[in-house]
Image (cartoon, rainbow over all chains, first blue to last red; front, side, top):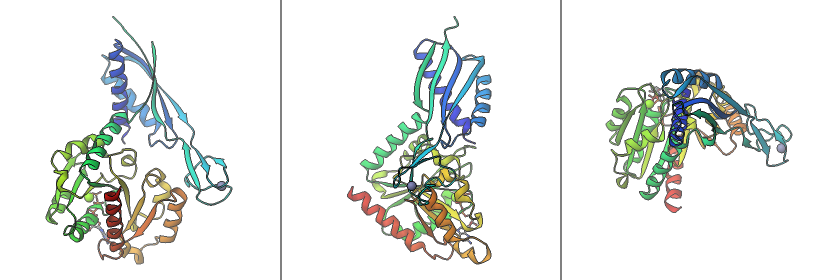
Length: 119
Length: 219
Ligand SMILES: Nc1nc2c(ncn2[C@@H]2O[C@H](COP(=O)(O)OP(=O)(O)OP(=O)(O)O)[C@@H](O)[C@H]2O)c(=O)[nH]1
Ligand SMILES: [Mg+2]
Ligand SMILES: [Zn+2]
């Protein structure tokens, strides 16, 4: 389970940026998590709750995590078919040849955060 | 106040990976990141690799484990330089841990550096360590379903070593099926069936390493 480590990195990125902008309370964090980005939304939510509760000096008790899923997409280099890659990521459903390239679904970003200066 | 970041979550890891990559480039060190589930045979493969290639190349190994110095000791016993990273429960190596371990190695004196990642088919695949090549090890007793079940590992590796081929007669593993499954996930990846125990197929792996090293020097 590396979602704890990932959330640690996420909160650190947010905190560094927020401090630079003079904020001292984070209310909300929004992520984009691709369907094949190698991170599980549920595990990320659990990690967020845990880490928020350990860092209440910087995160509001009500701070929420919003996860936007980026759909996985692949495109066949032979026939141009756009398809949703399942387990057989590279297998084109039209050509039945492993000729697909992943073009979306690997994104894993901190999209935004909301914070305030509580003092 | 809302702030839009659009920052990659792995930004800090990726920066460290770039730092490592530049160091490897400047010191002409070819680096391979070996990943597999626990017990697939990474350390055994590396022991054999050191035994056969150490006369020709200066080899070092970074060993990633949750705890203990065992794997590093096994490599040292074969006569190669080994640095142990203990992740203290962490399920993967990240580029910062590798950067720290590099402090214990003189890269100018190393031709090929192997990094044995923590045994885990999920987490290590997402972390760039700055390596030139990502190699997965899969072993016959794990069964045919591992490639389709962990596509996120196999879509990101360029070579799969299918180890413990000596156990094929006792199990229902199909090498053909594994090749087909791998091609359907990552057509650019090769599958090399071998046995670190009996040496069957190992020359192909050594051949691959030597080819990769030549290419690396020429680039
Ligand atoms: N039969 C057989 N056994 C092997 C082979 N290669 C390794 N083993 C055995 O498999 C077991 C695990 O091997 P290791 O090399 O320690 O595996 P590992 O991937 O380094 O394991 P972790 O570092 O714990 O993830 C040991 O008992 C090895 O002797 C092989 O080709 N055939
Ligand atoms: Mg090992
Ligand atoms: Zn097609």
